[in-house]
Length: 112
Picture 1 (cartoon, rainbow, N blue to C red):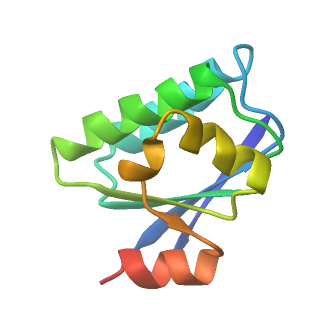
Picture 2 (cartoon, rainbow, N blue to C red):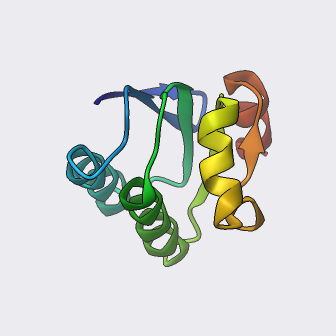
């Protein structure tokens, strides 16, 4: 797994390439910790190049979600494949996270 970040208007975009699993989730946790420490107000996570996420990856996202709520940070997810989105649905995380089909709609929603 690799990650990259960029700003689009007032929204930080974190793009994830590859699988998010027990081996790679600590790397994602480190990246999200940096973003949380910087108190990033709006984060859109781009899953368009992510092929798989396991429970350790989901837990990592939940940790970030909880830490960002301390400073009223907003977070959304975009570009999830059916397989990745199913991982969120199985544990009912579609009730917690906001999903967008693409980056443009995610950025539009978060910048409001």
